[in-house]
Length: 247
Image (cartoon, rainbow, N blue to C red; front, side, top):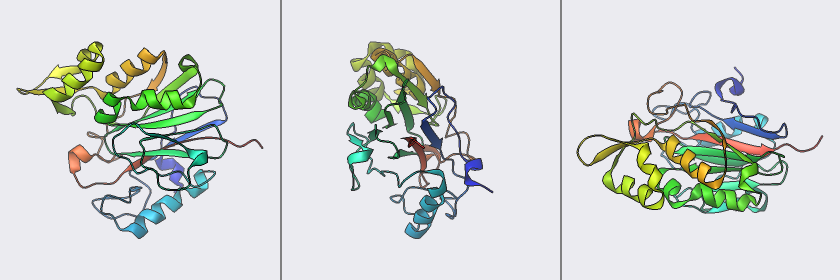
C-alpha cells in the first residue's frame, strides 16, 4: 500500500504551492514497541530501521528534510541554510524544495504559512516550548505580518489525558492570564491542560486568526499515533511542510 494512504494531509486553505504532510505510526518497518513508521533516531529503535523508514518518505518529498535535534526550546532554523543536525525546535523556509519537519509523540506540531505562499514554518510545541514562546519565535523568523499567516494544529495529547502540575499552569498564566481558561482542576495539585487551546491563545495574541486542525488526540488513538505519555518507550511521527518548486 502507498505510504501516503497512512498519512494525514492537513485540511487548511493553504496556497497550492504550500505542501504539508503528517505521518502516523503506520506504514513502516520498525518492530514493537516502535511499530511501524518510527522516524526518531533517538528513542532506542534499530538505526537501520529508522533510516529505512525515512527513506520510505522520499517519494513524497522534494528533498531530504532538515531533521532537528529537538530540546523543547525556542530556537528556529532556516531549512535552506542548514546543512547539519541543528539543535532547534522550529524550522522555516522561503526557498522552494527545502523541507521543514518536527517530530512528536504527544507534543503539538504547529504548521504555519502565509496567505501568499511565500514562506512556511513548523514548530515543535511541547508545553515548555509553547510556554516559552516557540510559536512567537517561529512567526518572527518568517518575517511576514502575522495577520497574513494561517496555522494548522497537528496530532497532540488531548485535554482529557494531559495532566500537569501547579507549576505548569502557573508558568502559562504568568505569561498570559487568559491561559487559566485552558486548565481544568484534576487531582489535588494537578490540572488537565488543553494544549490546543493554549496554542490558539498564543496565535490569537499574535493576530493569527485563521487556525485549523487541533482535534486529533495521540494518547487515545493508539492505532494511529505514538504517545510518550501513554507508552514511555515509543516512536516519533513527523510533521512536514515545504514550498513546491515552480514547474
